[in-house]
Length: 608
View 1 (cartoon, helix red, strand yellow):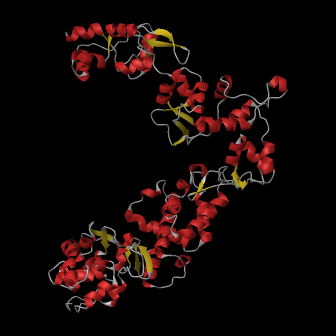
View 2 (tube, rainbow, N blue to C red):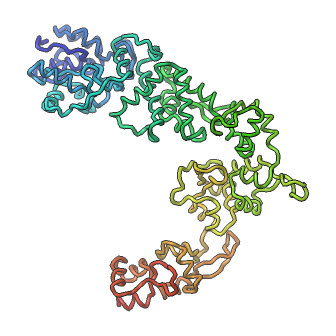
View 3 (tube, rainbow, N blue to C red):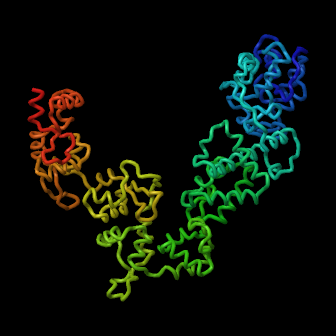
């Protein structure tokens, strides 16, 4: 081993062998093979590979071995580094990182770039984001998918030497965070006295990142979108809470529940990244069990979880807690009214947490809830299911909803409606509904979809209950019936199949290129083109249709840009431009807007 290759502080075996090989003008794999060792095994820190080099008088300094990942005593998917077990893939990422200030100092100590610059072991740990010696961020150096080429660092670093000396890799320095100091102390084997010291280092670091990501909700609505170069802040955000232990963590989780959003939005929104990782990615890893226990206990004590809900990957088999919101939905009682009832009984505070988070023991309040679930007036019933009075009246007229008592006159009271019937109705139409953040193109509230089709809402509701209509949306901005959206195209295809040879006005308008069907309907109703009243074969209602004769009459009198382009084999853009120049305007004899519809006689006179 050439004496001119001194080890660097915290250097890895792979780096030391690569520099030594460069001094002999060969690559690291060839150098190791010549010494009857494997560079792949040296990268893994195999003691047998290190011993093989000794047989050829190639000694690896003990400090270099100590700051290198080792495969001794662990499984093939693990590496031991500084007494801590890491997944092997975590320490063998395709991107190599380092501190340009450390590398610059290496260059100053030695003339040859190929043999002077060394890779440090702690740079392999992805949680390390700052060089504590120079207060310089750890930056990407190179990326290589093949391990033998990736860890043969000498040629990579030599090619980077001009950029390093020119300061092109230099970034703005910053002071170390509490997390970064703690992590370095753990790697150095020092006891920091924090609650996190008892856990696996890799798991503790990941938990700081996950907790910090969730805590970012205090600052941004998109915590998962923070770039990698800002992760040091997220680590420290989580560390400054987790270092104090479970009580502080539970307090932080409670604070997150005070931000916008409720249990109905799901734990993924309230605890972004943290819930999914603990519930799925790390579900079988015992290193995360304590962190899972904290979140599970917290949710059991503060979330109104229902039977069938999921708690960290496991189904809930018993409801322990109700919130004012879930109890109102279960009983069909207006939330404001129910809260007053529960407050009067001492179950909840009248002005405490929001209804979604104000929880109470479900069994203890069962008697109170049953007593509160008495019959209500039509007004209260409509409010309970989230419907306007007119929407409620239509549901009653369509026999979707029926009172528990025969009539107000016979019962002698206006309270003839059972809120539980409203709950069952909502459950029947929202079964399998997809959450909607906003009603994008194609989604309509059920009442609007029914109006467009000129059918009663009960027709659509029965199709939903019979599973003939399955694209149902639950709009996040509303509750109850107000949140019930349907995909109008599906409703049309199920409820309004077009009769043979005849087309609805809407379909005919789309066929000829009239973008807004209301304009086609206006042409018909104002007597400019014919349509025929016919019985719809499925809906059993009279409806205007465009028959083949009606379509012929339209085409004999009018052109649309689409039909004139088809007739003359020209682009509609050029044709409408020519019409403008010729002073030909869209058809509008009575001042009505019929869109881009032209009289055929004017168009033909212009182009023939």
